[in-house]
Length: 480
Image (cartoon, rainbow, N blue to C red; front, top):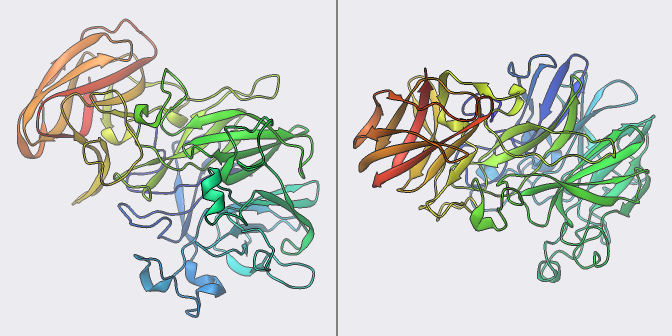
């Protein structure tokens, strides 16, 4: 299901790699409702390649304090930063030529790439060094260096390639502070920290892309690299932020051409959605990768919660690699790594919603001031964290694609400041039932409503639309 990690876990910027018989998720670590990105230390998760529903935590793999820059002499003066720490931004991990595992990362606002090493992919990792030139200078800190950001790494036939950088989203952005920001590639020596060649500018930015295949989909940030056969795939977040796009080349060092969008975390660009005001979910930045697991390809990305940009959770979708080397664009779903539609009976947390729209049929950027828009929230209970759909006003919809048919009845756990009803329909528009919901300050379980038989038998999108007064929160629903 999506999100695929346990309730209350916020691991965005996911790089997913198969090492042996397990698949590892390495990402940054957000705090629920946190004011800043990546406020927690790295925590690595893994699952058996043949059971993508059995994710386990390896605990804290690397702490921000382990980076020497966080020794107290360079305090983070950004409002909200705790103890003056610079936080650990999006990382990547690879197996080095020596068989050990190397973690690459940048601290927030710090233009240097840190490298840590471990004997196992799950860690714990020990600081090794920063990426340096042959003269010992830290890459990213020389006066003419490009800014280091969001590193990704590929070990390919014994050679090591580092991809990094971010870029402006428009010409004004570049003119007001992004002059040294650009995507780049650097070859490293087998010691994993010394520059062998480069860095070289890689993808064109918005001032360089006219007439190229990248026009309108230039890189913003979030590089991720894979080799598939003899082709190199660079996944990145484009200038629209919510998209994960990709480019391909026959060389790891350049010659990339734009190939398309893998997924949007608002499903903008599919099903008639053309603008951010038509987003299927609260949108924001995106960062992820593609990985083949057990013979099947998946795209990993993150979604936004809490009406904020800095509370993100890992999600994934199956994706098809076509004979011509392109990927078929994926849509967001509630089923995710399930391998197909969810069973049509059972109790489901509302946190698996992958459609949250207002009565006008869309959503927008995940910003706390947009109190009218539905979003995902979390509260503490005696049983642990509870995630739920919050802020459904009249006409707002929570959607759950998809189920392998539906049970005969449906009940919901809600609370409402005004009371009303939930109208149950399918994604095709078929009306299945209405469920009355009473005004309540605490969570209340409705009576079970009998569902009409949906016309779709094997792939049913369940939509719950609130009609009533005030706002409604949805914790879970049960199909029987």
